[in-house]
Amino acid sequence: MQATWWMMVLVGLGIGIGASFTGLGGGFLIVPLLLWAGFSGVQASGTSAMAILIIAVSTIAAHHRLGHVDYRTALLIGLGGIIGAQLGAVLVSQVSTETFRKIFAGVLAALAIWMWVKK
Image 1 (cartoon, one colour):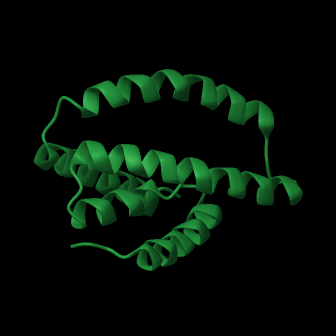
Image 2 (cartoon, helix red, strand yellow; image 1 turned 45 degrees about the vertical axis):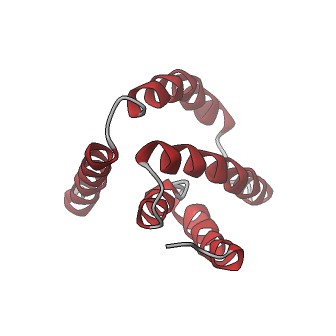
């Protein structure tokens, strides 16, 4: 499927709202959308990361204005995330798109179950 630019902007609008509301970044929505649009797993992952960066900058500004950011915690998590992101980019390039889909779905399912049963 070839998505038009305005469709992507509208999807981005929804993802931006969802990302800001949930703090999940939006990749859980962007990656499946890009896979559905015909992107490979590696392309979906990389494109999603770039879109999330753009969305995150705006989200940070909004939450900063509202006083909702614990900068110390965010920086500590971010330091680990820098290393993890580099390793993840290398690892994702080693798996097929089909394997990527299964891993991504498994992670989402596990998170959903954990959030559902957590009290």
